[in-house]
Image (cartoon, rainbow, N blue to C red; front, side):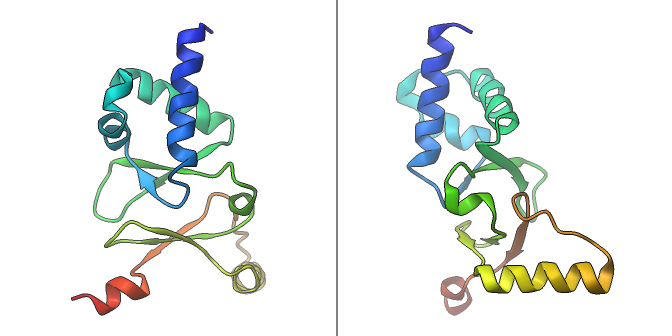
Length: 132
């Protein structure tokens, strides 16, 4: 790998680390890193590599088929279920006790084992519920 692409990957990873509780499409990242002179194809290539490395996770957003990505390299993100607001796009960590209870009950009642690190539940956050 060339030093240039390593610098680009660092810029993308730094972008995610400064926005740890948000999700972004490749296009949004490209637009926000506009002054970094990183091409959209480089963004896609690096997103793929960062996903393979376990530093980001691909997720979907209700109502769109576009892929979105969230930063999961933080220790607090590695073993929790995330909650994503369909209106504002903010990501929250589910309370660990509630998450453990959901996983346990689902495994027991449905014989289905939830993968915590890759799980995102979609709904509407409290702030958006009150803003109509």
